[in-house]
Amino acid sequence: MSGFGTQGVPRSINSTTSSVTRVVAGLVTQVRRTSSVLTWITRAAWVVLGAGVVALVAGFSLNWIELIVLGAGFVFALVGAAIFAIGRHPYAISLRLREGRVVVGERAMGGIDIRNTSTSAVLPARIELPVGTTRASFALPGLPPGGEHDELFAIPTTRRGVIVVGPVSSVRGDPLGLIRRSVLWTEPEELYVHPRTIRMGGSAAGFLHDLEGRETREITNADLSFHALREYVPGDDRRYVHWRSSARTGTLMVRQFEETRRSHLVLAISAQERDYADPDEFELAISAVGSLGLQALNSEKQLTAMTSHEVLRTSAPRLFLDELTRLETVKSPTTVVEMARTITRDVLRATVAVLICGSSVSARDIRAAGAVLPVGVRALAIQTRLGAEPSVHRLGSVTVLELGALEDLPRGFRKLER
Image (cartoon, rainbow, N blue to C red; front, side, top):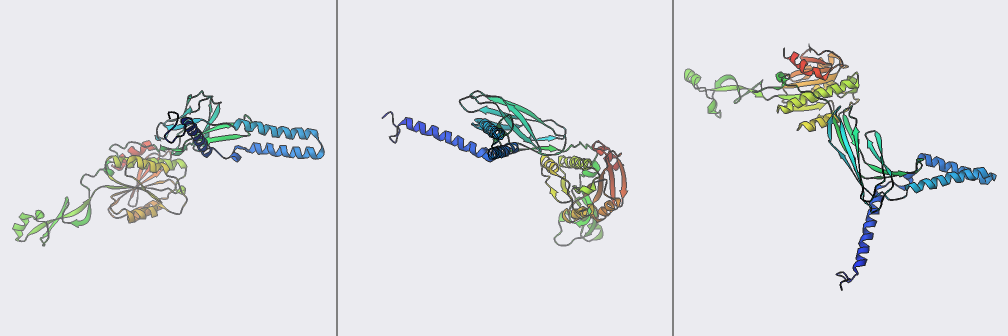
């Protein structure tokens, strides 16, 4: 019984069955990954096929031997090209990005690891990798059984945005490019190219640093800022009884306070395309928002960041930068005035509101935006104008900082403190 399995089946049969199962499973997986047969045929191949059919029909109809030979040549060329696409793609391919997030201008590196999983050598092929709107192509040499090949690549990061990298595909085809058979091996990955930011240091301290909070005109029975004395009423906390005044007047007196609130910075950036004279003005505005937002988050200040059409997530610096990375300009009738109204309606505890816009926004709109912000909210507008010297002026209740370069942002805030 040594030659039989537990169910009385010969072990050799069990071994053969398992081998066949593995082969079938591998073929099924590859069929799922590979493109359909019709997609193997390129546009050039359809042209060659059409020319061949026309030549054959015309040759037989006219009994013209040259056309028949030409048509047959076209058809045989297609058959020969198809031979190049036949065969397995016995690879294990993985895509790796050294970092999923980089800053504009930094070098983004990645790699493709390829291994021959078969027990026989494979012929050379081609590896294709979509990177954003472009497609990179690498020559894959022939690999021995179990052979490996690594391909390194660099991704340009000259602009902010999310770059989709992949999926990686192996391609077989003829030298003429008539037949092209590709097999997908990986899922696409996202590379976040974060906007440039600059450290503010103490430049924004006057706007972001508030140890005891800002006083409001709301009166409360317990806070930090003393306001006045009043007569005691049942239910008042006796800890706030002012005993000297009570002894002098003969009436029990308690302290009243002005309610204070912690710093709550609101960064509102216009995403309207018409508000910017140049796309680079919008990029400068994004970088200014990122710099101020990181300053607030690192100082553990309360932050709300928004655009003219959405609220950005700010629970962590990386998430905040990811949100800024995805921002694009839109075309809608929303103005900075309506953005200020949204702050008034939705951000009830704001203490500082910064409106960021481009040079195409008029002074009248900035003045009107400041007029609709709540009383007690310190209003600042950052207007980007490429190449301009940092300058500060007032438009109604709004202090306007004109910004020409990101490096001028700390210097501009120092001017605001004067």
